[in-house]
Each structure stands twice: as structure tokens, then as C-alpha cells.
Image 1 (cartoon, helix red, strand yellow):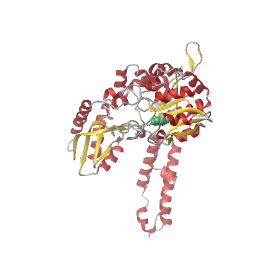
Image 2: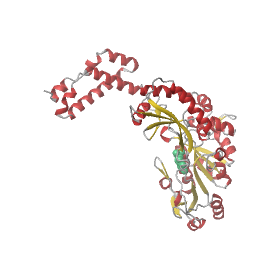
Image 3: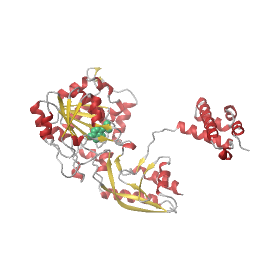
Image 4: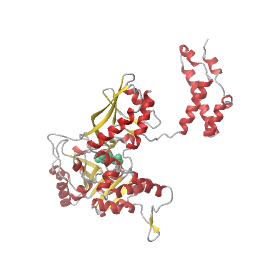
Length: 469
Ligand SMILES: *Cc1c(COP(=O)(O)O)cnc(C)c1O
């Protein structure tokens, strides 16, 4: 007979388990108190499992010491391993928010290493030896790259938008076109950010059409700013009208109110030369006369998470004094990585070759084809691969909410197995020591060469081998 009481009585005690040599071995890699806690947690799991099981399932619940020891070992190892681990992005989504958006440039590594693992001149005026400002490290180069009068940086673009609104339009009205009230994944919605900043949203126009007169009619003595938001993650097609930045700027000038633009992805290089649709650059927003322009550091710019604010000095000086600036402060690791990334933009060719996101977005099809052949070659070395493997044409995506309609022609390697489903193969690849994240199309596993780095070919070949043989 299997009754709960007799099974429960067979669960070993913590002290009994501690006598096994397997536990001594665990204690060589993990402190004793942690091992003991894991043993307690594991035994509690067993008790709960037995309590909640139906009489019919009891047979499966016979206590097996080997099984308990194995489970404890797995739990201890899990506790010791990192949760945030490096993965190989084979999805072809370049700015993959769930995979950390922009991988940093190798060129940034040394600067980051130098500044992050010791002390740095983070907030010290090097000439005078007195306290300085962390923002100065990137202000000069941002001014140079964008031709703006002034610049500063915060934690991310959401914070940049919030700080801008709070500084220029707290308790005032901000006029925005209804067609630009966007939501970005991860609960960033323009109306919500606006409310949180203390500004009052005034929507004008309709979803598909907004005219200059709509803005004009909405302006009154309560108006704090006009705002333009780049609809980076969707497009309204067909019968549409958006007011040009230049027109908005002229109107704002006449009415003597500031005009701000959230351009989302921070693009410095006109990528249309590389066959990519034109995305408004930061420089073009400044040239159009925008007073304040905000954008992300880790989207198309290809740097670390940061929110960059460029524009007129009188407005940015006011932002520096806003208490939110302290709350939204960029940390030194990000600042260092941002400076390193921005420096690469001084030379456009260098930026294209050295900044991974920019390099991947502009990668031409012959390079992708060569990459596919090289990886294919490596995988062919796996003997008796029980699957069909091919190089095929497909499309990659920019991701990060940028250029939603533009598909980038690419080369992929597809793996088609009879023995296991594509979902199962995907899962096994994700479970590999260095997880490989792939895509599934028509029950084939698909690896896009655009986001795969050359240094990872061997790892991918090993992972596929381990998953299939
Ligand atoms: C992505 C995006 C944001 C949010 O930027 P984060 O850097 O992720 O905070 C804000 N506005 C627009 C238009 C965006 O595309």
C-alpha cells in the first residue's frame, strides 16, 4: 500500500543527506550554508509533491536517494550559474530587445575596461582638479556630430522624453498629433509618459491626417511645447498628412513656444546610401530647427542603453537643474561605452565597420552569402547529419521598433529534420551551453547570417552537432 504518511516518513533528513560524499563535493564549489538551504528547499519540494498527489499517483513517489542527490546538485549548480548569459542571435533581428538590443563594438571594450575597473575622471575637472560634470565627457562630441548647441545624456530615451517634458511643460499643455501617440513595447506610451511628467496632452488632428492649422488652433497661453514623435514602429499608409518639422518649427517660433522631437532611434549616418530606407537623422532634426531632440543610445546608434538629448542650450541648461536629472543619471559604465561608441562616428567608414548594429544593417548580400557558405562548410564537417541543410534567401528585420516595413534581403541556413521537429531542435539549441536563438519557418530551423558573428561559427556547429547526434 502506498499511503502519504509512509512515503513522507521515508524522506531523508538534512543531516542524513549531508553524510553523502556528493554533498561534500558540492561544498567544494559552494558555501556549506547555501548547500544546506538547497537541501531544505529540495526536501520541502518533495513533501509538497507528496501532499498534493492523488492516491493513484503514489506509486511514482517512492523515495529514491540517488534522485534526490541529483536534484540537489542541479539546484546548487543552477544557483551558481549566471542568469544573464551570452547568447548567439541567429534570428536576423538586428536590434533584438529581448536579447539586449545593441551588441557593443569591440573598439569600446578597451575604453570600458580602462575606466570601469579602476577609478576614472568621472566627475572631475581634469585641468583644475575640482569637481566637474559627468555629462562633459560626451557633450563635446555630441555637439560635433549633431551640430546642436548643447547636449546631455540620461539613462534611456524614456527618461530623456520625461525630463524634457517635465522641464519645459510641467503643468502646461503639450500639443501632439493624434497619429503620433505611439506605444513602444515594454509599456512606454507617449500619453502615459506625458501624464507622469506633469504635462497635459493635447491631441490634435486625426489618426491619418494632421494639418498645421490643427496645431495652430490648439495653441493658447497654457501651451508649454509642441511635440513631434517619430512613429518609428509603425507606418500609416494611404490618405495621410503629417506636418513637416520645418512648418512646426516656424509656427512655434511665431508663437514663441519650444518645439521638441522624440526621434526614437538615433541615426547619425544617412543609411539610404546603403540601400536602406531613409530614417530621419539626428542632424536633420537639428537642421529643421527643433529646440530639443531625444533618442536612444542602444537602437540604431549601436551603443549602450542611454537617452541622448541635444538641442538649444537654454533649454538643456534648465534640464540640468531639474531634480529628475539626478534620478535619471546615466551610470559610468554606460557613459564610458557611449563615449567609445560616439568616437567611432567621427569617421563614417569606421562606424560602419566597427559598430555591430550599423555593420549588420548595411551588410550587403555578397558578404552574407560568403558568411553562409563559411558556416555551411563548418557544419558539413559534422558527419552523418540526419537532416537536410540548405542555404536559402530570406529577410532579416531591423527590430527595436525601427523601420517596421523594411525587410532586409539576407541569406540563411535552414535545417530540416525528419527525426525531430523544428521546435524541438530550437529548444535544444536554446538549451546549449551558449544558447543559440533561431527562427522557425515552415517547420524548418532557420539561422540568419546577418546577426551571426564569424567568431561564433564553431560554437554553432558544435551546438547543432550536440542537438542532433
Ligand atoms: C524606443 C523609443 C523610445 C524609448 O526609448 P528607450 O531608450 O527604450 O527608453 C521612445 N520613443 C521612441 C519614438 C522610441 O522609438
